[in-house]
Image (cartoon, rainbow, N blue to C red; front, side, top):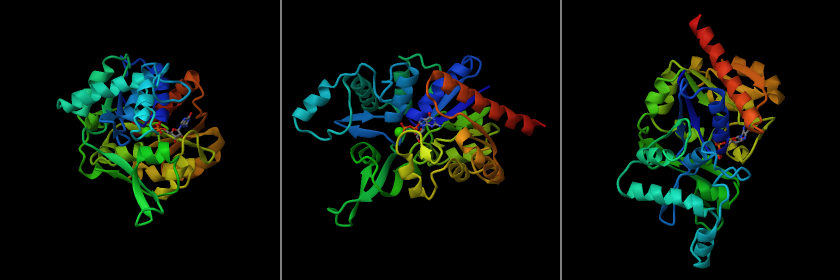
Length: 330
Ligand code: GDP
Ligand code: CA
């Protein structure tokens, strides 16, 4: 069984730890297509927050409390940069983490594409899966926010500034700048086309999954794959489990609910992207409406409170995929 997963940072990475432990990765190889639209240049370094969250989480070296960056981190370089008065001071660049960005930047500067750089970085860690950037091209999510000091009363900021420095204020639009002209990274379309199971884990539908889908060719590959395509709701009981996804869904006209996100992705039977959708037991009442959209739906526990819960969620996801494959085969 070949399994492919589209992933953002924390939600995707936690799901992936559960998935890796639920299968035998030698027999059931896992390929991850990682979001790169959070990427940013800082102090001359190329930082790829979502790729690194997946790499550190699966490598067992993520900081478990923060959910990003390295465990046992120190911040001396950051303090020294602040002492020089250089901006930005709001982004947490730890000393250990910085080594990753130095290697990445050195390789990019030498002319290697991000996919090759990511493969080289991952070789150090025993991930038990293959991590592919969604694209080698530069794509960066920008968010338009109010700014009374700007001539237009509004200003576009990089997603990291919106999220980390401004803490997700009211947004007017979200634009994955560069996505239109981006090409899927090496292996991305193949990983979708040749998968038996394709999973949309509980990652942010707008700035993680949405940006991967914005790379031309990715959504079409999902519509056409013979894989069972199943997703896990990042919304439970009308709120995101973690983070500020509720701030961005309304910007793209989607209600903050498990059923609205399912309808937003849509059923492949009607030109959409999914065959099945998992909601939390708290949202069991949504199932009838999700089935009406043309999706197979189940209510199971969706909180990944630890490795066991993440594993059992991964098993439920694979079971839903298997039931869809069985219907397709009959
Ligand atoms: P980011 O790039 O770090 O923001 O991470 P992702 O895009 O991969 O995931 C963020 C989403 O994960 C948020 O919308 C959360 O609601 C969701 N999430 C985080 N933890 C859990 C969990 O335990 N269960 C579920 N169902 N969703 C979660
Ligand atoms: Ca992210």
